[in-house]
Length: 222
Image 1 (cartoon, helix red, strand yellow):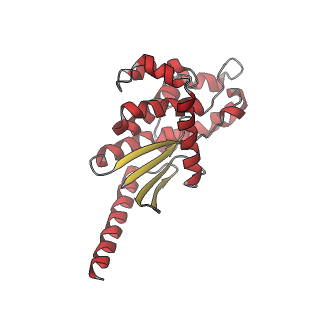
Image 2: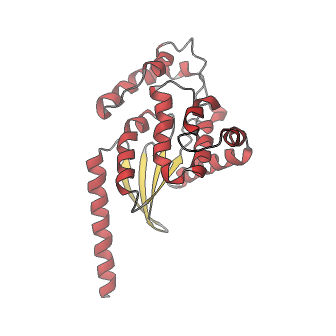
Image 3: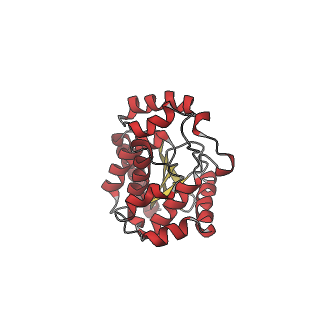
């Protein structure tokens, strides 16, 4: 059975959810496969300077902090509070490509990689459209630097990223974060849509497993 964690590197609510998601994945890593899918929240083709959305983000990040306990770093907030001086043009394709590369080298650590990408952006103020934003994570996940930067501009990996965007649409994901458990070819259970506390995730998973166990017993009797 596979968990699909649909997120976007630029999603503030995903940042707020990242510690919960990491703890959940760590708890169940020996029982389920975890697949992180990039959602393509900000298409590169229509990306706009940060000043276009700075006003919205300036209000929204406070709500994320209040509900989740996550803290946005001063280096990130500088771009929100000084948008006319920022050169950022946020887009989702570059971090999605980067994630697809990292997943090749550390497939069992996908949730933690996604959390580290968000920490790089929202805590440390790194521009995820700049390849250098990922250099400090290459050693941690044993990703060869030369190979990473070659693949970052390889159309094959851009296609991998766009495939994940399409898969999220196919899974009817319209907002992030979203966590789904696939138990059969066409059977999915929704565990999280938006920020969800860890104890709620655990309880929902327990209910699902009980339901599956009951169904198997009934099928065995028939």
